[in-house]
Amino acid sequence: MRKLSIILSLLLFCSLYPNSAFSKQYAAIFNFGDSLVDAGNLCVDGIPAYLATARLPYGMNYFGYPTGRCSDGRLVIDFIAQELGVPLLPPSKAKNATFHRGANFAITGATALDISFFEARGLGKNIWASGSLHTQLKWFEDMKPSICHSTQECRDLFRKSLFIVGEFGGNDYNAPLFSFRDMDEVHTMIPFVIESIAKAVEKLIAMGAVELVVPGVLPIGCFPVYLTIFHSDPKGYGAQSGCLKNFNTLAWVHNSMLQRAILELRSKYPDVRIIYADYYTPIVQFMLHPEDFGFYKQPPRACCGAAGQGPYNFNLTAKCGDPGAVACADPTTHWNWDGIHLTEASYGHIAKGWLYGPYADPPIITSRSEQ
Image (cartoon, rainbow, N blue to C red; front, top):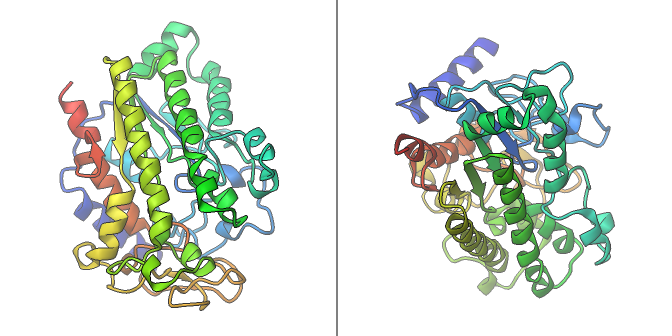
């Protein structure tokens, strides 16, 4: 079964990337983010008993065992690294790892804003405080002496590297959302989140980065965790998608403001390529046209979970990895993995769209070939 799983994963990879002989133009990839791209940082220092994502069926595909990734297999960053000829990025906290081809600083629960922002608003207990965006930048600074030995050597390496900054914002908004604060209050946080992301991009540019990918947030109103916890009258749901409109509006406003900030950064740094990467559009397409991606046509349903309120296969008392929760027979037929994160199949489609279009402005590989 292990061999069969590997063969099927390779076939999926080849079908997603028919032109995967792209030359190795990047010296390294450095990734920052939250649980969407965490490759195991949260588990490096030991696995907390409560952490269901460190138990099977997480990692059941491709790896065959839990790695700390919040999916059944690979994440967007894994597909990107493989397509660009770079080894899978080790978690930055990994012991005895080599980081000369890059590192993954992402950690589950990460926010764009530091904990002081949330504490000032009575939300300090509602975030994990595992490692905010600017904390991850500090980890990157601390790593620099082990991968380059002078300011110029570091700048030379970073000029040949790809930096992926995010997504960030989802956990920032979750703090007030899951505290049942008013949606208008949540919207007031958006400018602070965008400013934090922009400052992080500028810090990396100051260190020598010339090519950065900055993803937006997901259409959270389409995810089982929100659909299960929050309810609306019939007019509050999308007629075709069944998603919560006001939650998707929050994500849309964030993404619009982020794209505006990216335009300003491009104007300020004309010699730097800053790529906007889109999670929102492909997930909406998974919902509206699932057959185009090999997914079942159904309500927003988690592959891995337990029966709960509504048709979403999500139950807060029996989440994926907990007793009573099971995975669907074939995760490639579902876009949603555990009610909160995506399946490997979904991440593969999104990564392809970031690499070649249409889910990035400009696509990563197109931007390299035009240099």
